Image (cartoon, rainbow, N blue to C red; front, side, top):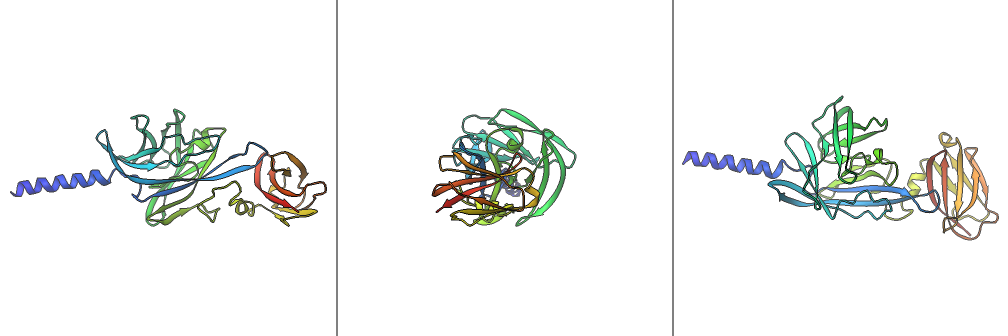
Length: 303
């Protein structure tokens, strides 16, 4: 009888292990991903939030996975055409695999077993390509619990990404780490917020919100770090103040609501006065650029 009880305990232990060890993240996890891409008219940026949640566990091909919903990315450059849901699985060696409804393949998207100096490859199901990853350094961060943090570069790109255990990439779409760095056009993705049990665990330090769902929502926060525009609404003149670090080749552009540029003026000093004579009343869009870098965008109401 004791023999059977021992066997039953082992079986229960194995069942418990198989039902929990496969999970990449918490069963209540939610990711808010910030997506940015160029507007079709004028040098502005569109900001949107994609929300993904764990919706349960599932068994496929004899392996357990966590199922995640996919909020459709409606941008012109859609980098998240993964289907209505995807499945994540962690194996015993800390590799994270992604599986889609449209095929029965496991794509390696993370390897949290690696240490500083290691090189390895990950896969992207959207583009059928392989990225060579180099780990620059590894440490531990406290986000409700201790989590491994990896600083990773792709294909020799000097700009690095950050992976956090149980959360994923924070400088690209967490389901497609590295696509920001290996695809020259399309949308940019960053982790905006991550939560468990409706408790915020991670938030991007540059933003005070976890949702930016419309064309200009939240842009004022971004702009405030680099430049200010006043008054708004305006009548005859506006003042644009810009940080000196962005003065090199800085230009202010003003567009009508259709995207037609109606005013352009270089920003040659920390404080610049811009006349609005000839600018019609109504809502306008503006952009501030510094060389090839977009400093910020927004709306200007002329009365």
